[in-house]
Amino acid sequence: MGKADSPFTNGPQRISGIAVASGANLQNLNLPLWPNGTVYNSVARVPVDGAGVTMLNAVTKAALPGQCFDDPVQQNQVTAANGFYKFDLNFSDASCPAAADISS
Image (cartoon, rainbow, N blue to C red; front, side):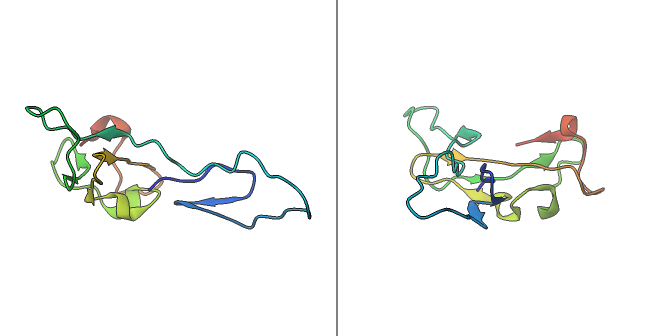
């Protein structure tokens, strides 16, 4: 989940097209590590493993289509043991609402 940040070709959870000279020590090849949030149990106050997270259109309450995400598998994701989730949205497709019209 999430897009890499490097001087090479960045994609969802991937860096490709890396060119390095023999003996070089590349720095700042950053894969995304920080989620957009954590789902917590409000009583036990611990992260929730296996929680389903869906991004909705705030106006229609319909789930956003996959093309609204940099990585389509971020829609309907399930949290890991640490409860983390992440959404990387893009608004390049006409079916994606304005940023003010989304909720999770």
